[in-house]
Structures are given as C-alpha cells and as structure tokens.
Amino acid sequence: MSILSVKDLTYVYSQGTPFEHTAVDKLSFEIERGDFIGIIGHTGSGKSTLVQMLNGLIKPTSGAVYLDNINIWDKPKEIRKIRFKVGLVFQYPEYQLFEETVEKDIAFGPTNIGLNEKEIKERVLQAAKFVDLNPELLVKSPFDLSGGEKRRAAIAGVIAMDPDILILDEPCAGLDPLGRDILLSQIYSYHKERGNTVLLVSHSMEDVGTVCDKVMVMNRSRLEMFDTAQRVFSQGERLQKLGLRIPQITSVIDELIDAGFPLKRGTLTVEQAVEDITEYLKREGRL
Amino acid sequence: MRDITLGQYFPADSVIHRLDPRVKILSLIAFIALVFCSFNYVSLAFTALFVLTIVLLSRVPLKMYLKSLKVIIIIVVITSLLNLFYGTGEPIWQWGIIKVTWAGIHNAIFVCVRVICLILLSSALTFTTSPTDLTDALERLMKPLTVFHIKVHEIAMMMTIALRFVPTLLEETDKIMAAQKARGADMESGNLANRIRALTPVLIPLFVSAFRRAYELAVAMECRCYQGGEGRTRMKQLHLGKRDAVCIVVGLLVIAAVVLLDIFFAAYV
Image (tube, rainbow over all chains, first blue to last red; front, side, top):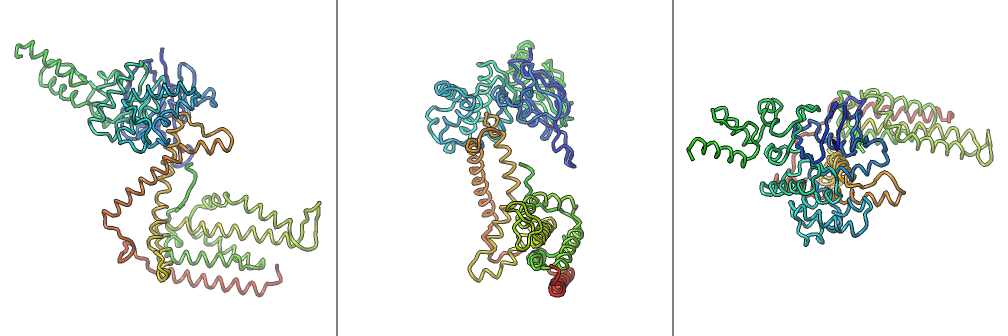
C-alpha cells in the first residue's frame, strides 16, 4: 500500500499577475512505505516546490496529496500534524538553529508535538545518536558548533519528530567530501534501522546512485521519469538531454560496454563495478 | 510577506524619470510646503491640478498610485471625520456632542486633498527614482553638512546597503519561517503573547544571518579597498541639464502662482 500519493498536483506562483509561473505541473505518483527515493532535476525544475507541498507548507493550486490515503488538506486546521508525519529538512538547515543549547533546539519539534519531558529527552538523545552528534555537544550553544556539526544538529531536529517520511532538500550542499559521505551514510543507516520512507533531493548523481532505490526525474515542472535507480541511470542519453548526467561510475561502465565488455548497464556503485569486473576477469582467466 | 514594497521604483522613460534626482528631492520638499500653503479653494485646486499633471507626466500606471493611496486611505478618512466633527462655529447639524459646522466641512476637504497630494507627490518621487539615485542625490545634497564633521558619504552608503538588503532579508524570513513551520512551529493561531513568542525562532536566525551577511559584505568591501568617502570618485556623475533648469523655472512659477492665488482669492476659504 502506498504511504504517500499525489494526484494531478499543480502549483502556480503569483497566479493572476504578469509574473505567473507554473512551478509544478500535474504531477501524479505513488510512494511505497520504506522507499528511499532520490529526486533529481535542474535548478528551477520544481523540486523544492514539490517537497514543500508534500508536507503541507504550501497548498497546491490544484490536485491533492494523500498521506495514508487521506487528503492532507481535508482538515486545514490540523495541517501541523501532517508536518510532524512528513519531516522536511530544508537546504542549509543550520540557518534555522535558534535555541540556547543544541539540546533545546533539537527538542523544538518534539515539544511542538506536545510530548512529555521524558519522551522529548529520549527523542533528542536518539536523534543525536542517529546523526552521530557527540552528547557533550548537546549542552553547547548551536552557534559554537562547526559547520558540519550544525548541519547534523539541524537534521537531528527534524529526525527527533520521528516522521514517517523524511524529506531532505540537498542535505550535503556545501559540505566537504568526507562530510558528505558521512552524512549520507548516516541517513542511509537511519533509513535501514527505522525502515521509514526517505526522499532525497540532490544535485549529486553519485549520492543518489549510491543510496537511492528509486529515482524521480523532474524537468520543467513535470515528472519526466520515475523508476528504479538502475533503470533511470541506464538512460544516460535521455538524462543528458535534460541537462543531467549519470553517476561517473555508471558512465565508465557504459563506455566499457560500448567497447565490447559484457557488463551491466545502470551499475550504480564503485563496489558493484569492482565486483562485476573482477568476476569477468576471472571468467576470462585473466585474474 | 512579499507584498511589502520598499523602494518601489517603476522603470519607465518619462520627463520626470530623466530629471536630476537632486532637483526632484528639492522640488518635492518645496511642493509639500506648497500644498500646505494653499489656503483657499482656488489655490488648492490649482495645486491639486499641478500634482495631477506630475502624476500623468511620470508615465507610471495610475494603478500604482492608487495602490499607494490605498494604504493611507483609512488615515485620510479618520482625520477628515475628526476635522468634520470638531470644527468651530455655528453648527448646521447636531446629534449629541457631534456637530457639523461649515468650518469643519472646509477643514475636512482641505485635509483630505492635502494628504492625497502629499502621498501622490512622494510616490511620484519614489516611483520615478531608483533607490541608488535617491541615496546618491541625498549624499550630494547633504554634502554641506561635512563642515560639521558629519560623515555624509557613510550615511548614504548605509542607506544604500539597507535598501539593497530589504528584499534579501524578506526572502530569508520566508525561508526561516517555512523551516520552523516544518518543525511544527505554530505562527497563525493563539493570542498576541503567544504569537510574539512564536516569532523568536524566526527572529534569532534572522538576526544571526543579518550579522553574518554584514560581516561578509564588510570583508568583501575591504577586499576591494573601500575606505569611505574621502577621495572617492563616482561612476555616475550627476549633471544638471536643460531639463532640470526648465523644471526649476516651472516650479518657481507654480509657487508664485499659488502665492498670488492665495492673496487674490483669500475670500474663498
């Protein structure tokens, strides 16, 4: 059963003015429980608008979002409850930190849900653990943390609400390569451990290729493709026409295939590629 | 949030747009004084007509002017009503403590027309002059104040930067509000105290980011050797042209006309 589905979702900015602009155009798709989905697309293709509609921050111009088969705008007064179920981490989330201590900041979400003190404390510790935030840091001011720590603290603030669906908008933007890898693997292990649904908006095809099962491709406000990562990234030429590319390792393997080697199209990780190539070489007796 | 328009410059190609901003600022001050020096109906009508001419000459859609009038229409109505009901003299209509007198009616009309003229004039200035031109002109106009060791250039630079960052900070506010709402912040309901408290999660990050931006901008300016006004030349020099001379002459003629009308039609109050 799908946990989240949207039907004919449309959003028009500044409707009725000369600046009218359709950001999301008649999108329809279904997301299964436990999916890890990457959303890719050019800047301005409507990704950010889409994710803000999924948790009820902006109301669709037309069409609807169904969470557990219930239209989230059925009861507009209870839209906050939707936001607890669909956690959204914005781009550069460290700019939203405001409390005196990291602990209080992570507790902001759970407090808004209305949990009691004990539950809040538990949630905060758990969330901090998920993003590998040292417990010593919890008593510090969030403004004294390093850039990477701030980012993780802010993500913990959303994870602490224990959402059924976690949406991250470019969580790795502006981090150094090591920081990216660590954060990505933390998000991945969080997804594995909790089994919840994760949507990852990213410009890095490598990131998406490594962690996502399915990939959604947005182009000019429309949903261009929505399929397994392997199938999407097997279509390098089509993606290139949209101004996107495939992960580096995938294109290396594609070239090898074109050169006559019997490998698999849509190979997504370096590990997988190494395995396939070793196997091939062994079969040929060259290794 | 987006509806707040500060620095509402409307680019177009009109006589008013091409005037020197210094002339425009000084004319505005003069004409505002003029509006309050129109003491009788004839001179008031003349001034109003003159203001309308400027509005039409500016080639800015009338809709824009109406929009800026809409904001203050309540103030106009209230002050007119107060003037209407609290006039002195013989009452022509009375109901309890509320009485309407001829003096009151005259006052109400005068206040109404004057305030509308005022708004139209200052709108005409901000619609036809870009914020940078405005601060440039202010800097030049305030230059004599350097005698008193007032840092005119620095003040103008601060104004320019402040204006420049209004849209940026508005956008930032939108983003931060969305982020806190995503964490369940409730900003739309509750009483006043609760709503003010709900602003903390928005204001603190906003201040932090304003300071960060200020610091970054300062570093960027220093990297380009900015050191204040002394010895600084400008890319766009302001020059008074023929057009400006004509404007000044017309302005003086209008002032003279209003003064004459004030004297000759003093009876029509």
